[in-house]
Length: 252
Image (cartoon, rainbow, N blue to C red; front, top):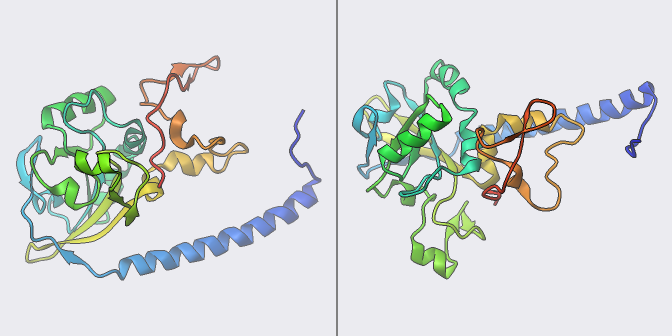
């Protein structure tokens, strides 16, 4: 028997209209944050980065693929890892459906990790993803954009992440970055988001937020339920449920 508050349809509608007003206010505030984001100054990327991908070596400018805007998922897959981060994989599971629509708005989507290309390709094939994924191995790219950290910094508890000091002491953390390339071919860094900002790629969360139980992540465990999509155990309803232990939350 439910313990949740119940009401008549009229009372439900009254509460729903209050929620609608709050939701519209949130939408307007979100639009304002978007406007402020687009007014941020840009930073010219002067350092040369060369990535290894399926098409061979490419510069950061090459990754735009004839478009003027580039979105990068900083995916946690370091050299020697058996598999990529489960939470980054949860993000990436949403990518293939987006890329064709992003392309129609002059945006190229690319995933970048510091693992060698062969290790990236092995994991990408396992997961069945089609989006472009390149290796930053041997470059400073991940360090420069705040998603990789030297082991000595981690050991000392001194990593700077999400524009502050992070309690998440790991050598790799997630992020999403945006870049622009002008007609002269110059590349500019326009935006990066980290911590819970990477939820921008987690469309499943937006759907869960509509359900009665929401994300159902009580107890401070955050994303501990998330698994690679081929690692959920079958449940009694014929779907899949989480099994084993995840890699923890990336919220910061």
